[in-house]
Length: 96
Image (cartoon, helix red, strand yellow):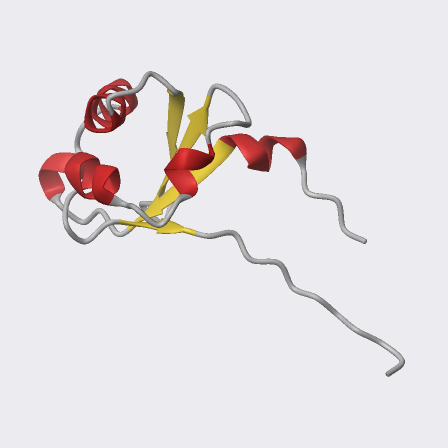
């Protein structure tokens, strides 16, 4: 059984923000925009990946609200084309 690294529980990946005004903002501005859009103070940090995606780090594991189906906060903070990217894992089954 594969064990999920503990930091994955604290992270949310946002894809598809191609708006030049949004990609030019600083990471601190990104964190402030997400916290403003959610009305919470759960997002502590943001990282930009080479692909342009953004990883948001929450302050605790109980921040499951940001991974729910309601992605209205993503559109407010990142624009219409943005969406939450779910982590996927490959499974290899042998010996059936």
